[in-house]
Length: 249
Image (tube, rainbow, N blue to C red; front, side):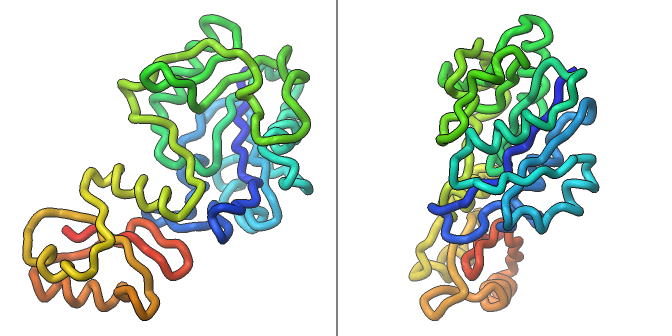
């Protein structure tokens, strides 16, 4: 049996605010990872002070919630906390990152299938480069360091090529990463050029505008009104505090 662990306790120091609570395609960022988790086997979410607020969300998706009281000790410390709560009947753990929202279920299933076939540590690879997720057999758990940002990556793993299923397993470190991933998912250009906004609105091509609701930006309501005036509609697909990215279609 393979348990699933979602690591969702990071301090988000480079993000500037609780990134796993940021909005991405209408839901909290971490919810996309939770929704992609396999339906079978025990599920564990390792949370920090901010993501503890999402306990009802995790429970709704069948996750037991455990808290890392020292997330500043790094990703490895969260992984160790999660592994300590895996039931004895599980012989391996699938590790998912709470800040990697664009990982398709097909990648997860290919990696799990590879583990069942080979019975060794396995990791997804994209064009030969190691990424996420990983499956770690119980026999290797003691090799994981207690602190630091290198968690499962410290263990040698058999690579499972998944580049045909996804362009990568990018995680989100900054708001710019969040907006870039939203544009990649939408399959259209991301722009921050407000000076040419009316010209872009007059052009029927779809694009994503990244801006802020401050004096130098364009409030969402203003963008919607300007889009409607050109026969266009908008959909906000990412939001961080006052910043947002919206598809103009």
